[in-house]
Length: 255
Image (cartoon, rainbow, N blue to C red; front, side):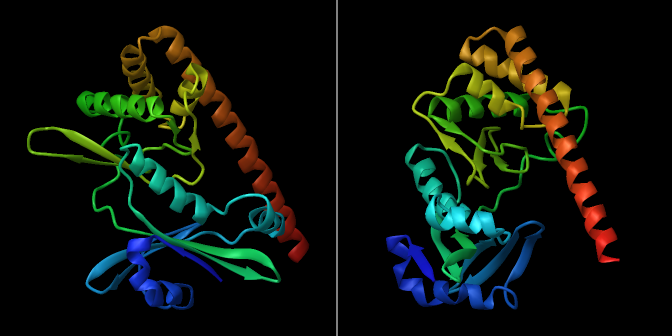
């Protein structure tokens, strides 16, 4: 078992080391789907532990010999983001377990971030708060100009807080598929916006405000993003259809 811990949390190594063994029977479930996220209370503090879906054989080979696991990337990216002044939960540690010499299970441990996702406040209905959308557009400009392209910047992965004066701050989660570049191109930045939301009216508005801040042509920017969204949705439909067909064939064979 490989355990990498942020130096200031080394004193908690005994607790962190036992997390894989107690994960199934302890902690409070916060999310359960492809991955499972749990909250643990230890030493009067909250620990957020994410166990990723077990990789298939090909992925096990890739994560063992050629590519960092999702947990390692989440841990490293948290440090990079904080160094760039982009808020994200602090990465405390990551754990990788091997079976037959291959990485087959991994965990990411972080501090909690007790603010809500911006969805459904934004994106939950056709009508939306334009001020909040303006703030979000400015946040994307900030991230992109700092060289950060979130791998899945949907509204569930962007957390927000609005203070008494109306100032809005943001934090990002689920960053392991992200990309860091010294200077993302205009095409790369606009393509990144397509994942924000499938609500076209909202996405068009955010893109317009984003383009204004970047001093780019608004009409062309909106057209680029909407075309990218169309392609993204078509690919996703094809992917889901293939998965459904494979599942049907597997079920039929099992019978």
